[in-house]
Image (tube, rainbow, N blue to C red; front, top):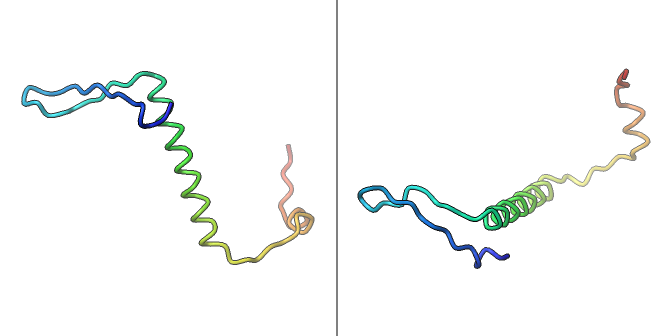
Length: 70
């Protein structure tokens, strides 16, 4: 299902103002999946923007990391 396929049903108040939306579960899931994808894209773009290019080896990181007792 694509976003273009969503067929919302609006609930209105006594003045005719739209106050709620009813969606099928498939439509709801489609919207939620699209939102998650958009959040991922935004996070990726933010990470790229904030990347200073500095890298460390995993082995170096593990040497400096605090040991956790389990």
